[in-house]
Figure 1 (cartoon, helix red, strand yellow):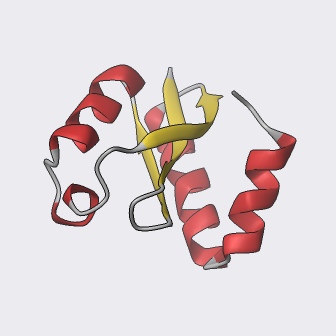
Figure 2 (tube, one colour):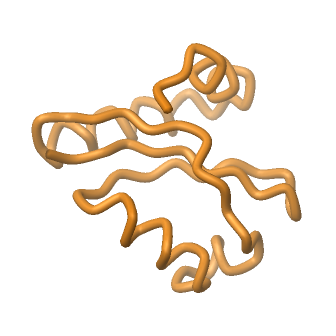
Length: 83
């Protein structure tokens, strides 16, 4: 199983879209500031998650969301919710 997830930082008012196999571990890493972008927005809050059969499918969906480059699109996903 794999996940597409969206995190939100109130501190910088930004969303972060990612895909992974271990959602709890990945959220923990983001909140430790392991990546350059997410280190600026700690603490991150999980606002959306969607489960996929494997990481390949999850990565495809992650890229689809990122290609939209649209905050309203992301916020629409969150409103429809999968949390």
